[in-house]
Image (cartoon, rainbow, N blue to C red; front, side, top):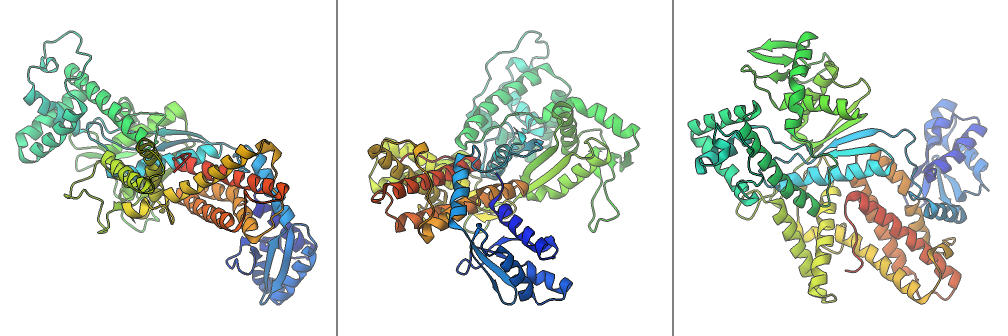
Length: 589
């Protein structure tokens, strides 16, 4: 289904062409003065110089061609050369009626679907998720859903950190605490126990303890380095422990990601890239891409056009050890080999931008990706407390993500119970749904690259630009529809949107008609915040319509059916939008 702005633009292109003007000037935009008109075309202003005419003369020529056109209700030329116009109500009614019949609510599926891998999550095994993991998870999930809705083939990869020094630290600390474990017996030749020798709670205590110890005890740190090396060289006992760490950690991570309504198609790990490293390094050497710098193996990625210093991309340390660069490049090799993606998107803290610039340039220079394979770094800002600093617990520590979710849910629960309209059990279940909307919408409504202030009180408010306000609007529509169909026996198919009879009804339709344009723009720019802005505007337009219109008490049955059809479409668009953002609406609030 064509975008409404494109249908309007077609009329202007014809008019400019018939008047002998370049159709490049026939651009149409939503009016920035809605008190004057709904749409405008300012092309006459730009065309004046080329045609040596006053802009108002050109504007009058165009208006004369378009007067009487069935797309427009009002069209006029305004000094010094603006063309202001409103859409014909019948044309608008037909457009939104067609939207209601479309599977994707008027959004066209891409004609050339791309295979996209989105790398988001980035959690480390043996460590709990904390607030720093929130943005990657919710932004990545929204971008995945947006692109999937647009018709692309999208795969989400959590890309777990599981192969670095943290493994050696855990193994070394465990060896000190439980030296009798069979995993430390070099002579053990049989199978290892199926059950892990620790719980997730114990594991999450072991790592920070070992990490702190390594900063004070050089001997312990060296032992951890050796344990890491032995693990990576295939020590059987250490590999069995590593597998236990993975199993216990991943089960806990899945539970926490489930609480965020975030899922991954791939649970790939750093270690999965290790088999690709030797061949990749050998290839880079043989092709002459590498050089030795202070003992390390590097690839120069600086370009003549650079205005800032771009350091070489280090492939191997002077002692032959690999780095994150090595692993990330090998992961690209793995992805190209297994999935042949057209596009790889990394949703990562924006402070990693230089690092990814090096990695991307190295991958391109060395031919690890096809020339037309897109590599995108989507850097996000930090979530800060009211003091403007990275969000912390009350005692200054890093807050666990599950505790943050619990805090949000409790705030929402207390607000629901203030009304005392539902049971405590129902309030708890509803609070989980509404709390998730508060958390996700509070994050996603900000441009990803910007820092933002996390404010529990504001995010959980049922008024203003918040997730709970959006859900409350959807629940209000559900309630109206429930009452209508309780007293009427026709089906949704028997209701049809009517020509708008008020400015509020028309304004709601105008906003609905922009859904496909907004989605296309949000997908192109990887911008979930644009969906949030649209959803908030649509919710506001519905609520204005609701307050100014007697929907259920309307005496004209056909007009009432028209209202029901219109708010049914509004509900569908709102629900589809929040589904893309990664949350859903309850039936009652």
